[in-house]
Image (cartoon, rainbow, N blue to C red; front, side, top):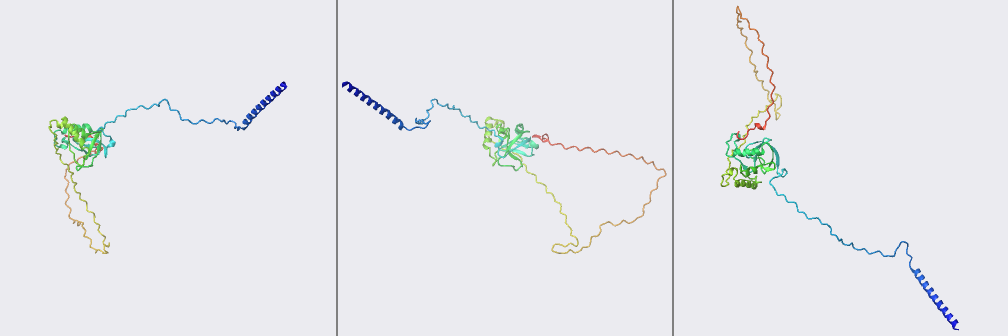
Length: 320
């Protein structure tokens, strides 16, 4: 009995273990069947969240600071484009230290200055006038210059008051700095009054030219003859010819002039016939008549010479 009971107990235990194993396998299969089938190529791994870029560990190279370029100091030299109402001209002749003759036949007078007479046109020369004219000739004679107008275009003497520049330097100021001329500011042309006065002060401080023995700066006015234009002589215009109306032509107002007798003839009377004078008798032994001489052949007219062209050398200089 005991053997048979043990056998039945063993069979029941094995049967129970087999049922439990079958149930576990069925539960596992059921769990797999309930899972959704993913399409091919689809992964269930979620996409990672975007992350901020990591900061750079090496600093960027910054440009090295450089010094600003030095500012150019202003100079007294001015370019031609900076001139107001400027023009170019060619200087033919220097009259004195403050006036020159240019190529269009006009005289240019330096603005803001006065120079002693240099003896041009037979005028008496003043002390220092020849030196100022000679220096002015070294600066501008025969050269291209720039003329700058201030306010006055043409003065009462027909001259052009201008500031004259050669190679960018104002000749008016250069002559003042060398002490060869003096300042003479005449309103309304006062654009560079302070510059010209400063140049004269510099010459007086350095005792140059006219200021060698001058204890104080006193400007002596230079007496210059005033040039007045000569009035043109009146020209008598010929009287217009008067037309004489025909005898039968009607006059203004419908009047008909009366017929007048023609004037008497002004021809001289015919000469009265007179007796012819007696003819002289030929001498018995007449003198032989001189043989006729052949008149000399006229000389060929000389070819006209062309007029000599006007050259700057024909213009008298100061002191001549």
